[in-house]
Image 1: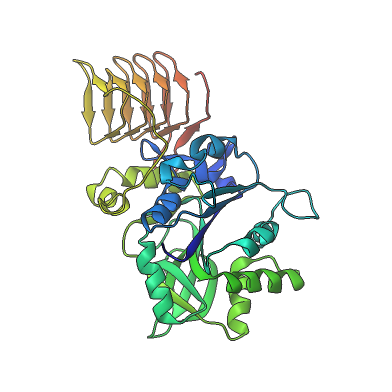
Image 2 (image 1 turned 180 degrees about the horizontal axis):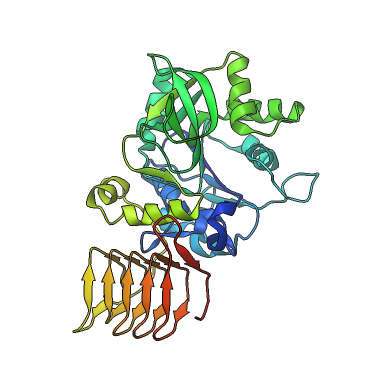
Length: 369
């Protein structure tokens, strides 16, 4: 079994996801018809043979608890080790509120001290990427660096950190919260490092009252003579932290190349099971270029949409460029364009809703319109 422990940051909701995180953390936001974002981190760990994983939580985590449960879907339900859910009251001081990654790590420091594995994989639960962690771990050991940062040659949506490297792939400069293309490569905020290295970063930041993981933690490591290497992930990858980023990422799944990169056959993505019948398509229905999950009942016109499990679209309804989450009902004759409909939404007959590709309209969970 690989000598690696998983640590997933599901502690904060991204405020720019707005209505999508009113009652859940970003890690439990539904994605691509049947998944939650945290499924990618858990599945990457499972596929690499990692069974001991900690999930750092902070608030609005009931949805996350309902989804991952004991971790059995990822073979992490164990009497010893396995999946550990880390609630926000680990520190002796404070009220369990984290304002930074360092705060969250400080809250679970005692948990980290007891971890049996020598290496830690630290990642965000809102990252949609399928990583070959066994290969990344091997690259980290070969590099001899203190930290290996997973990066992408592309330019992510929104702000991100960038790492400038030399010809040997060693980081020489850290660039924080950049947008658009620029020098260096974009960090996916996924790292492998020795447990002792992570504890040193936490303690150094705590003693200096520093709270920024990248500027103070990784920057401080480099100032102290530590080294960071880069592992380039060539496949699809996106950290979802805005509504338009979420919308674009789901629409990306309508392209076969993106689906194959995110869901390769040799590294499956696991999720919570649900027993649904096959989707029913009515005689007058029309479905073009869509991702449709099981358990749906479709009698209307649906084009370029992502439809989650258990959705009902009645006759005469027309949906274009929409994301409709599970168990929603779209009434007869409704007209929807560029809409993100959360779970359990009911749109009445004849209702018209429209957003735009850059500013999709979000209908909150449980709404009746």
